[in-house]
Amino acid sequence: GIAAEEKSPAEVLRRLNDMLHDKVDQYFVTSFYCVLDLLSMEMRYACAGHGPALFFRGNTVRRLKPRGGIIGPFEGQQYARERPFSAW
Image (cartoon, rainbow, N blue to C red):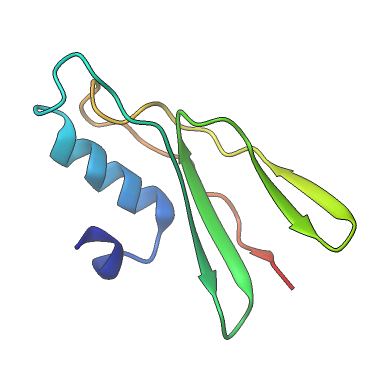
């Protein structure tokens, strides 16, 4: 699948959008997609029309605000590549 082939969450969402563009008709998909590297403990993420995700670590909460449009209706949609951050 796409997720096994791609390391970038933004690229996974872009390819998913391209696959679904002609198939969803009047519908759309929102998604928040992240990848956690268990060796480096870095997390990378991308968003497709979804609200901000919350990342909890101890007593702190970080609001993740990636940008990106919904999946489906618009061909060639691009998704922001957010900088990796430490999930440790």
